[in-house]
Image (cartoon, rainbow, N blue to C red):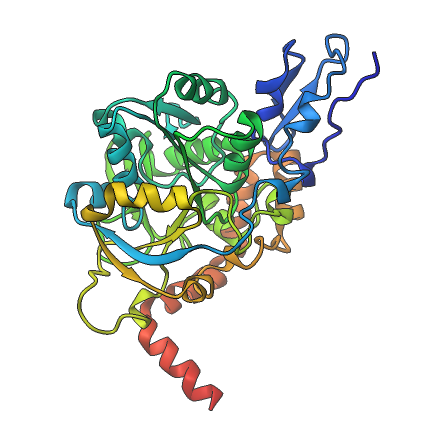
Length: 398
């Protein structure tokens, strides 16, 4: 039989694993390339040429999975539950939606980080497990093992909430096909993902640097009242860092230097969305709401309701939230990845080649030698309040 397996390139494969999940003979596996990015590999001796891996590839036909119109409603949102809000990266929308679905007897799927710092999607059935899938993880999550689980839950008549990057959300829709009234999908405003192997090697490098094993990582901590601060939980204590001024991985992730190649060609980084809802950070919200009514100090989410099912989901948990309706374009202009994909940093090829030839330690050494000036500038920018920066820009443009 003629082989009809997908021919993949780094720029047209997001590594979602749907092709592996759909293969009826197990001919597709997910393997790491030389940089740690996962890619599908087909065992041609086992392949029966059915073409299912081609038909399920949502990265090749994104228009099938995007909403046909812009969001129905857009909001600034803050969870009223202080505990859920504290454990969330921004305003706690996912946590509120997850609690509502769990309390209705449903199941929730999201990204969890293991003790070995591997990140993969898991399903939970109880609010007691919700903490495991809260919070941002700025590395790729393995979704290939949950597609069939979601399908089984839906077949049993249960509600299911799935949260992931737009490409992961599209992959699930492609795998399941049409229908599935009990399924709710939340996609994220996504900057991109790096490889889990790079992240793990960064953790090992930081453990050596600080002379203490890293036990946990919080990419987004609320120990400080404002800003996107993270934490390394060392055996010897806690070390705080800012995403744009932290060593190595976080700095280069934010700069677009170590993302998947497909992230720089992402067809889902746009105004039209995949999920029933889209959530993300509401950056610079203080420039929009200058008076009371919205607590901006503990994180605020932008929430876009994209479909009638999304509105149905919102009605399940809206009483838990402070909501302020806003114009969608106010969110778009504060989130670049709603306007287009992240551009590859000019250092990307150099850094990845350095990693391939000499390992992650060479990347860390490059950072310490070459990024001091850039880090100093970013720190200086962080000192200046957002309102002052906005006022200065307006003054200069007059």
